[in-house]
Length: 214
Length: 214
Image 1 (cartoon, each protein chain N blue to C red):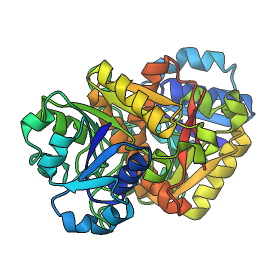
Image 2 (cartoon, each protein chain N blue to C red):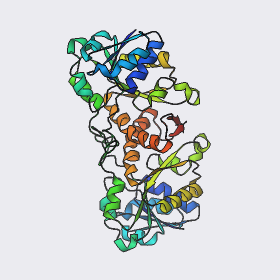
Image 3 (cartoon, each protein chain N blue to C red):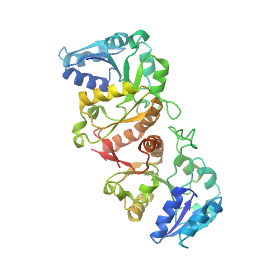
Image 4 (cartoon, rainbow over the protein chains, first blue to last red):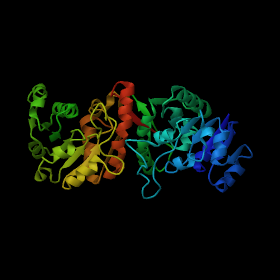
């Protein structure tokens, strides 16, 4: 499968490397290709780097792994015809920039980044997922409690959510993906990141997640 | 122990009944005592009802179980000398009023209700706790997974947090209370309530909680 990933940071790189290892065709899209020279060398020719528009055109499925504060300006370069009808898995978190405002969200409560992206690009199918979990756990959920913990997903199209659920299950081995409903539920998962980062600092590791007890 | 609980709703009533059953002296404080006639009858004389100021004066420890949208105006009636030096366990959630705005918080992101209360009443020791959990689980954590799930606590005074942790353990049987840090961390736990209420609606029951998987 051709996967286009927006973002040159650790999240995009880690997911890109994992998907390349799994045999998928991967392009990382960035406004600054020089940042990805080392990453590209490590993938041994199994992945490529492109502009934002090239990545949008390349991917059969798209992943937003940019910083939440940059997502809208990055995606504005994608080109609407390149996005048309595709699924965009939005895993960006909306924290500000460390260190001062790293627990202040750039959008919260009455709106969410996922909804902003959906409004800006009505022809793409935004599915919010993965944003409540560190990337080391996203790509390998069974490293914690044999995968007995949860990911939340939301979006306006049931079929798109079902596809993303299937992909995350087959790619990474996710067992417990909870559909919270339409894209307004991204407010809930995006605000959760503040408790996640508080726990990250307390534990000193991003290798944790939550499970639901009933 | 004399416990003063602000709030006439189900949360205050349930905690008040439980504490009375455990042999504590309980007063529920409300601006509308008539709301508590039935509850008072059910407690069989083990509890009492008072004004906000009477309840603040009565309690050796205080609990804010009012609606978040009403907490500041209720506590304004407590009388500063009645609050002086006491611990206030703030378990209010900051959701708006159902049905329309029940997932919009009255304060979020750059401030929290707990911080607002602390600023308004600097002589009380605010400890945020219990606000991420339904009251049926708060008073009986072992009804879920034998108590293997978490409560978050935060506040500016270590000793006050230690006392609240001890109380919640001895009163209700809590096993896993995680200290998130100072009172700014209430932003994290208060924003978490949006995912909680989303799950409540999905599951159709408040009898759930989260556990941390590491």
